[in-house]
Image (tube, rainbow, N blue to C red; front, top):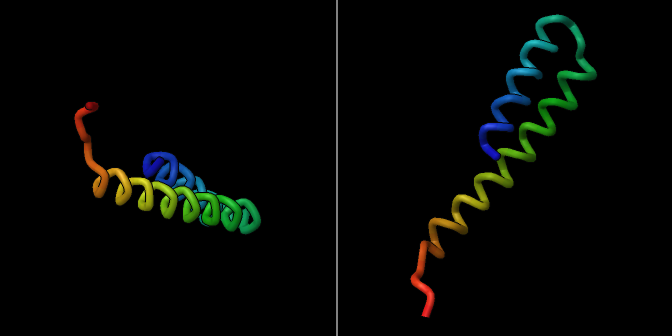
Length: 54
């Protein structure tokens, strides 16, 4: 998920440089949402860890 956030961030930077502010804004928002969701999932997986099944 973090990978896709970086992809959308790169798309936003390229669109911003080219002057496509609408696309850059949307790509930035998508990147931010994916980053936050990926961070939350990483924290949840870190806290729960891998437990052996009983």
